[in-house]
Image 1: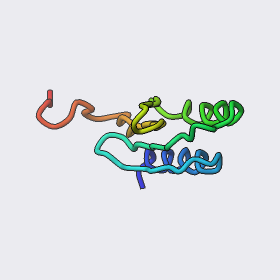
Image 2: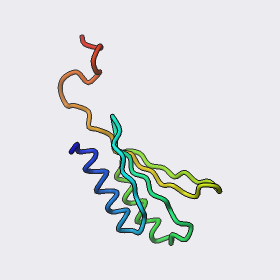
Image 3: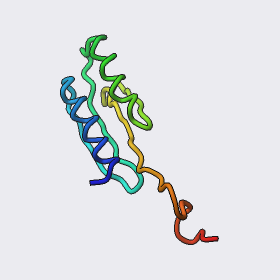
Image 4: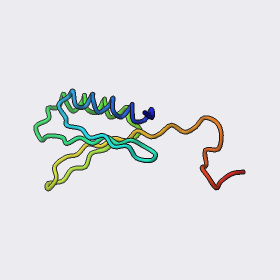
Length: 92
């Protein structure tokens, strides 16, 4: 399992422990976590949720009167420490 996926699953487990239903999805360069945020989430829980997602590489909140509130976070794959980090076709 890639390190990003492992980190994302850890973050998702911690969000689940705070009462949020989470989804984890692996993409080519990152792993994403999404969670529906209930309207009645107490302020103390918000602080704890923000402490968790702050450990991700990026995070945000999508809010709409039609779909409610969805918290998202992304954990990127690590960039290789050596070798060609520009990808195929960009060799020196």
